[in-house]
Length: 215
Image 1 (cartoon, rainbow, N blue to C red):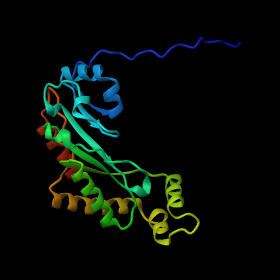
Image 2 (cartoon, rainbow, N blue to C red):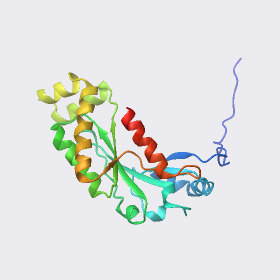
Image 3 (tube, rainbow, N blue to C red):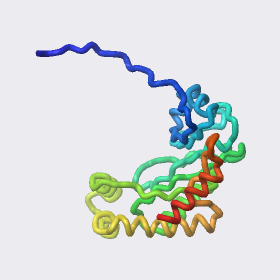
């Protein structure tokens, strides 16, 4: 028997705020489009990690109880893997917000120069801290980037790096160089917040540092 179901309009999700303050990850577009909902979450003591994947201004943030409730992070991706601008965060830093850059650790040559460019871009964007995180790449991702960069001529060195090297070893090498450069530039590693009504930003930052060392 065939059943015909009438199309239903999308329903708005539950608008109730959580009983216990949470830390939430929010993208720039969501922050702009759901301003009222974000304001409610902040009012009950939640903390926001805002991913600035598109331009933002301090005026885009709702009224806050404390700057520590919001931590902002922009993105850095090697041009070899795509075109992703690192959004400026200096205006937020001047307003007292914690600002940083999430750096994608991807196979790239030369290794040291690539990481230097990433850390310098982070500092110039207004970052106070960095988070170094390996980017998971499929075989298809690697082939598309390789062909776009070198075409039919290819590049033996890059081919060995992408397809015949241990991704774990590559990521470890990138992280070591990145961590050393971050120290030289005075950039902290790890998330320094956000805070919630139940946990200060300093406590959260200490927990992140312990997890980093434990790893």
